[in-house]
Image (tube, one colour):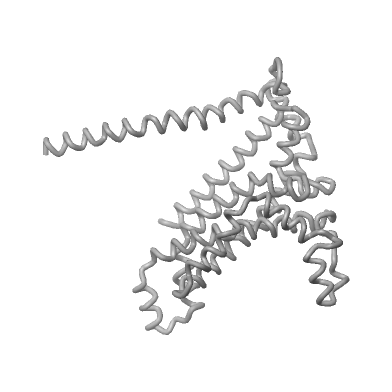
Length: 295
């Protein structure tokens, strides 16, 4: 027992020794940035020169700004449109690929490819597809005799955010598909064999076996998907720059305008703190639900 205890203590010391650099790295580049951002949010500062301490005035101004609530509302709608749809399509593709044995790697590569393509490429491509005069979408509608459906997709406040959401779903569905597919590989094949013997078809197997066993994956992807969608900037900026009339201005676009275009560094720091709190509260809430489902 004494020898085992010595080996355990030595192993524990080695783990601490090797984890110390990682903790220092995380502390310097993550926690320091967070705390410094919180500190900056209490100042009136343009990012250059001296700063003036104003307490919670930046937060008061934020909650009195209708543009902030418009950006928050657009972000919420964007989350509702993109995350569930990306998860549903990704789960469908993963389920279909799970039974494919011929050229399965080829199909996985094809579906995952949009996720690794540069966002600039996807944004400019979809902007061209949505172009009202020569875009592919309107051209296809005209070919099928649906001229009345042709539209200025990115110029109309009603359809602009939905159009960007479609591009986002296209770009991220492959990631969801890969995570679901990997989770399905860890399922016990004997469960499905027993279900087949009992007469369960594909739909019943999906409903009563696959979907319930993926609860942990659902929760993880919900958290990752919402946090990722909260940070979406480049795709929206490339396609509409937040227009028309703020119809596609997400919280990230609002933050960029205040920080880089209006030079309100202290104000934008307060906005980012609020965004961080939203992500943190949601994550804690989602993990609590997951823990309750496991009991």
